[in-house]
Amino acid sequence: MRRTRDVPALVSRAREGDPRSVARLISLVENGDPALPDVAAALAPYAGHAQVIGLTGSPGVGKSTTTNELVRVLRKTGRRVGVLAVDPSSPFTGGAILGDRVRMQEHTTDPGVYIRSMSSRGQLGGLSAATPQAVRVLEGAGCDVILVETVGVGQAEVEIASLADTTLVLLAPGMGDAIQAVKAGVLEIADIFVINKADRPGADATYRDIQGMLGLGERAPGDWRPQVVKATAVKAEGMDDVLAAVDKHHAWLQKTGNLLVRRERRASVEIEAIALGTLRSRIGSLREGTALPTLAAAVAGGTLDPYAAADELIKGL
Image (cartoon, rainbow, N blue to C red):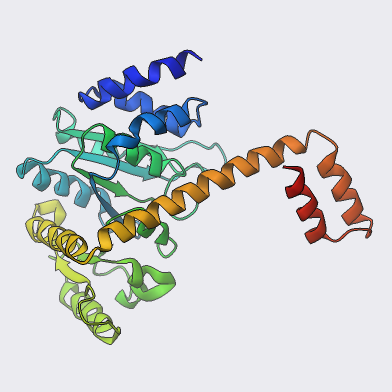
């Protein structure tokens, strides 16, 4: 109960920019602490003010370097920046390197930047299950822009689209056919394509391939056409163009009302995830009783079908 009483003080200090309080709140979120509902309630008045930008792409395209450079150009405009970098967890030990803060050391002493590495903890889709609530913490801490960098598993990272206002899909020449980008919905989730490492041979061909694929898409008048931007993050080249494309998309979202639509969709996904998590925990508690084993025995014995058993289980909740 001590942590519950500490929540208002933690939120107050986080609002003042205290990095330890921000870290503590995100840790409560990651660990599923019993104080989490109190944290969410305390943060609710400060939600919806930050611009959330997602960065995804295959391993090796330069997501961390691009994130680092985006932080730099955003700070030049005076915006407070939060970074959530999701690292993969080992399926054997459950551990994660959480090395993105090492790559972004130049920003660690900047009070206008908060960087947090998070373990995916086996969550699919390139994010951690705690990421939406961690975004709320950074919003509460006064971040104007929050960058969310996904794990980098290739073609399965469409989950970021439900979290971000603007989604950047990073590609690099020489890493295979650029048409791979159309697979598994990655083309559909991209608001902006960033062709990183544009100083390499093949960058122009990759640019043409993506522009060609976008030209085949059907859009209603006024719909957003994804931008394609070339950059070389390691040399800090083209990052102002990337930020200009991000700001252009944000302005379009505000003008058309799509920003509210996306944020309501994000809230819907978040509510559903919390509700399902609560149901799973309640079903888990039934395993210790007699209801679930009794229903399982009936299904195994052929006296009850699994759908009827599931209905009975839900009634018991």
